[in-house]
Image (cartoon, rainbow, N blue to C red):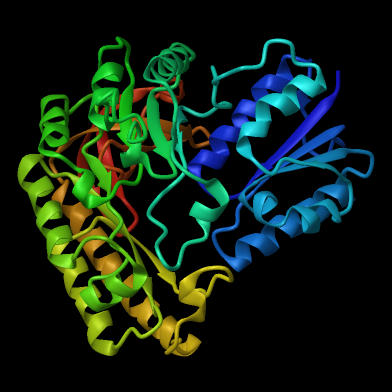
Length: 420
């Protein structure tokens, strides 16, 4: 039986696409190589969001070539799209897929007669990602991904619903809808008049013990209809939204070519908090963008505190060759970027701890993901509100949804008592 090794860098969409390739190759009899066992075929799914991502992608290919000297290496993903010739020159590489639409053709050429259009399992995880769309039209001035991923491409509603059904039937208890621009699902079908909320409604008609989580959205894409649906189905749709802020300064947002002012962003976040019981709001913030003054940075800190995010992903601006921001004047000194990032991270940790404290006494729906191997009975998982949770209980709860009462909180998460 031929052996396979896969390595994925980057986003949830990349992770999904790797699973799609793995499922297709399984139909040819491939199995995952175990431990140090050499692989016959290696798949590397690359990322290009930063220059560091490019370096990691190249390093991953070289490492696989050293560890699997007889393997064929196939490289896909965003870095492969942007730097195909450089990738082809790496050791062991026999093929480069420069477009995700080439996955089906690649599997066919390998001999897969029944090429999968979706997945039926997501490895051994309790959580599964489902790619519902690809591409982005926004072209923010710092981002290279629209150039690597292309224009919008949404998967048909019926295909997605059927895939979610398969994954739920396979035991996955949390389904995460993912896309390059999730909120634009269906946007390129104006005659269909379908949007993300229609997709969510269709998935909710499925029966079974699973919950749904939405990945990153723009704040203005959170409609009153979506909030009403989330309020109506608090056990089926996780009360958690990741809304990308990027900056709290309107001057910086304009240079980023973001489309919405900071006040509108905050207004939408507060609307979410008023509409849902104790929702988790998470976000991304870039510090040290070209021309960012101390006043601009302080505005970002104020906005973060005003919303009270439960988690903030803080990124120091990194000039990305090929984007307008890389050529902008007034690039910020790396030491200043680091200082600002450290300050915002400290603020974010305070807010995160405060959010965990606010959950005390609440009944949390927890996806149990692991049990302590030493047999202590400790279980670890993630609540619907995206808080890490530790509790005690039987190991057979791993992979299932459990009810936990929050009894204690630290900066790292919540400790609770299993209910029932």
